Amino acid sequence: IVSTNAIGFDGVNLWVFNKTNLYANGVGQFTLLRDGSTFGFSMCPTVTYDDALPVMHLVEVDNLFYNFTTTSRRLRLSTITGQVGAEVLALGTAFTPATNEWASSEQLTFLGGLAPQLNSPFNIFNWDSSINNVVFRNGNLWLAHTVFLPPTVPTHCAVQWWQANTNGAALQFGRIEDTVAHFATPSIAVNRNEDVLIGFS
Image (cartoon, helix red, strand yellow):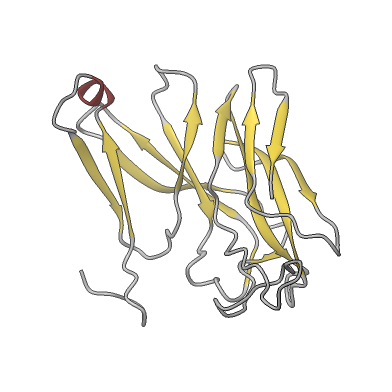
């Protein structure tokens, strides 16, 4: 595959494993799916509690690779469908509205970050705004991720959370933010009553 950028990133590989085969101590049967467009960067599959769900949803910050040192405004949704062993990846099946903006990363070197460390000259680097945790509950997607604010020249990181439907409509959106404290690396849990718990550093 020919790379389309200077640092050699050429896409995302997704391994879809046959769960029955794995649980039976099998050979690890899988289907390899690929987004070679380089618009996909960190595609996060949903945690779901329905073993008969015909669609697996994936969520990511849209175009994060190319926006890594600038700002982001929306999420890209994709799906995996099909029978076991014949799965199909559909990219960009929906997008959230571009109504919010955040810096995609700290825009600093890997030698330091925005968050101060007690009794140390070195700051904590809080990486980027990629999605690492999505939960599918009652037909909706719940997720949380780190963002950097203000968008153009970030001074702190915050936790941003969403409830979105599978068509991309943002049903709820919020931030856990303080202009002095730094909040990062969140996880989200949702029960069937849609009680939500967000953990973060």
